[in-house]
Length: 242
Image (cartoon, rainbow, N blue to C red):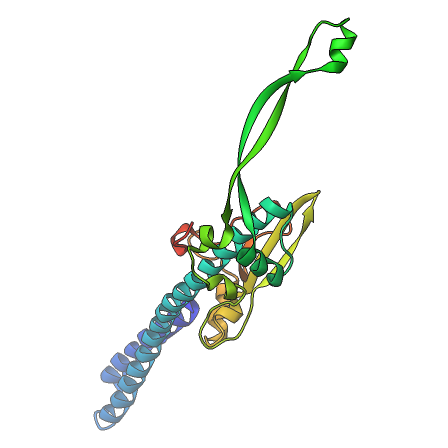
């Protein structure tokens, strides 16, 4: 877009120069017609320049608004996955499993404590001299429901697989597995889905963006299948929940 603006500005300057040259060297009878045509061209090119800038401003405002909606849902997915892993020892590989878990399961509230017990093997080895060892015990104090804890009684979890952008019926891609025996997951949606009704060139540029404040890469995602990571690929100003 910047190249277009520069090109249009150069053309405008050249046109102004031509107007000046005409004013100096063209016969008076032809000047009014030529000047009118050239000034018309200047106005037209100025309009194109303005619209190029204005369209990008509008695009940036719209993408930020949509990204925030998508990111809020991705954070819900991440929080639900962390609770799922705490209970199941792994991440859910489908939204059916994850949504059912949120609706029906609970997570234990535990307390760890250390206690001394007789080490019978070492006691025998030391000829009956009592030797103790420390054991860590985990007591379950209570349970909290995932639905109430994360979603505060809301039923929005039932549609957290949906991207949530008006005008497009799309769902997040959800993957889960293990990386070096460590559970990992990733939920994502391509930027072209989120920005489905926008200019293709602007979408292409956005997918190539690598901004600390914006969304890096071709998709909006949380988690990773390539590294142990439960963070999103966006700047901190785009989320109200993190």
